[in-house]
Image 1: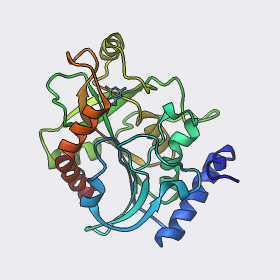
Image 2 (image 1 turned 45 degrees about the vertical axis):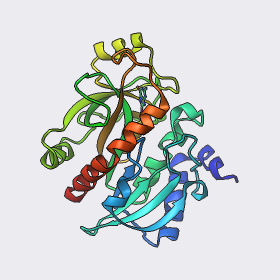
Image 3 (image 1 turned 60 degrees about the vertical axis):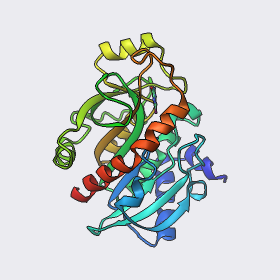
Amino acid sequence: MSNTEFLNTDPFDAARAAADYIAEETGFDSHDVALVLGSGWGEAADLIGETTATLSAAEVPGFSAPSVVGHVGTIRSVLTKEGKRALVLGARTHYYEGKGVRAVVHGVRTAAAAGCKTLVLTNGCGGLNEDWAPGTPVLISDHINLTATSPLEGATFVDLTDLYSSRIRDLARQVDSSLDQGVYAQFTGPHYETPAEVQYAKRIGADLVGMSTALEAIAGRHAGMEVFGISLVTNLAAGISPVPLSHEEVLEAGHAAGPRISKLLAEIIAKL
Ligand code: 8IG
């Protein structure tokens, strides 16, 4: 069976297989908190603690190498100063890769199977609020799933009230009281929005637009984890800013904000 064919079987069996592999390779049967690092957040793992094992994502059952420049294809086991075990997923599969929703949430399900009780989702995204300069971190308070799909299959009716833990958002604001929060709309991408779509997102209540996170958060809640989401606004969304978007600009904003947001994330995780 090839590495990703695992996902054609039961997705929870696939997650179990991946978690077993991770336990074997890292030497730890259980992890406490999972972190998914999105655009701009790649350096964060270094400040969280000591990396005790680094796996290439492509070697772990059901995972594949990332297809986006700026995304890191590793899975790391990190020991925090507080003695927590963090599983750092540098390799997110995006819906636009066309591998299906099971592949998108495989990392989240693997984290749950590895014992993680907390799921920290980070991303780079577009901002609708002009006060948020590129490089501004924003807490996710809720989401709007515009992908027209779900990671859940069958009659799986999961409540998503307070999906994004208000407890952890409060902890984050203890670290930095200036943190704003907003509603994240997940588009499928990979194209950025048109200005009209950005206006639509604004009218239906979105503050942030991106191509990840919502599907993962749903899978995380379904798996019983406490979910925390934080976005890095790397660009003003199309039409909000007078200049066109570019992936280079996104990488640059992420890079510039890197040290500050990494420290922020490390301090939040220390408080969990
Ligand atoms: I980074 O402006 C990043 N990701 N959909 N729109 C969407 N995704 C993004 C954006 C953006 N910026």
